[in-house]
Length: 102
Image (cartoon, rainbow, N blue to C red; front, side, top):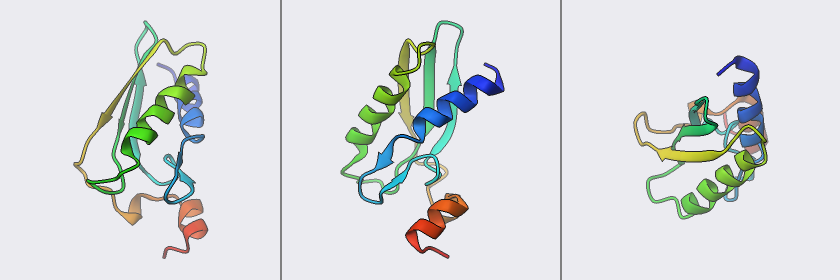
């Protein structure tokens, strides 16, 4: 997968908003990796803000929906991992400013 395709996938993921925080999952630092094979299968490795995040299933569904909008994507697998654990330090400058985090 080339950088242009990776950028396209990450751009689509910026449309997935964490409903509790109102910021997209990319700027929150929840997406650890995204990869696509030659058959169009995308693997998203990500985490959630907390282990018991009630919005987890909704976020995963939104990830699949947004990536399905790209013509190159035929299938999406979302892998939720807990290591490394998410922290505020993973947020982009934009997300920190928007949420008033230092």
